[in-house]
Amino acid sequence: MESYYLRLILFFAFLGTTILIFWLWSVYKKRQLLERIVKMQFPENYRHILERVPHYRKLSPDDKEKIERSILLFIHTKSFTGVKMDVTDEMKVVIAFYACLLLLHIDTDNCYDNLKHIILYPSPVVLKSVRENGGIYTKEDFIIDGQSANDTVVLVWHDARREAYHLRHDNVIVHEFAHEIDYMDGQVDGVPPLEQSKYHEWTSVLFKDFQKLSDVALKERDWGKYKLLGSYAATNEAEFFAVVTERFFESPHSLKRHFPELYDELKAFYRIDPIELVQK
Image (cartoon, rainbow, N blue to C red; front, side, top):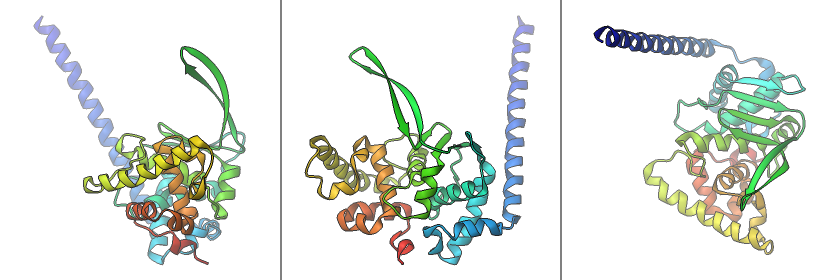
């Protein structure tokens, strides 16, 4: 019996040591990668791509340097996969830019650490789902132009590219990475990682407008200022946060005019005023 317990202890000791060695090796390799990225020159062709992006052109020199470092880190720590298409530098740079813009002034060393894969489709994707209602299951097809799930973000490049270069209400890259930020506290509930002191004000402002939008969407009339947000934002609190983040960066003047409290909460969280970035 003693021999059995001894073998068991040795087994777990060996297993623990192996895990520790693997973890230390991973930390070492990551540190090496970070050191290489710090020494990298930002490719000039990357900068030419960014010059076409409205939000990049108005960044301060310091912010441009900071986001360029973040873009390199993002590109070299995520895998990009094209479905029936080749992945280009343009795709990587544009996606990385908007992902990093959201975190530009947020105090975090987390460059979407949980995110591993970016999957790109050339055109909208039709997915199948099974829905249950009262014990009755039905199969449905639905079209997506983006999705965030587990460690993967799915994007339709046709839409992402168009929205990246032209200010509109929508930006699918911003939308999906807002979901990723929302999930950083372990839940996708419309509440991103916040200081405890700011939690009550955030939830009262955002959930108040979410509830009002939900009431308008349910009646499907008298949209008024809520037309700016649209019916999709009424799906749930998580989608509301992602949509208002889109409007914050893409239509900041309109959002501030119609929803000043909402605008101020987003400005305080992202620590950036996008109105300064989209002024002509």
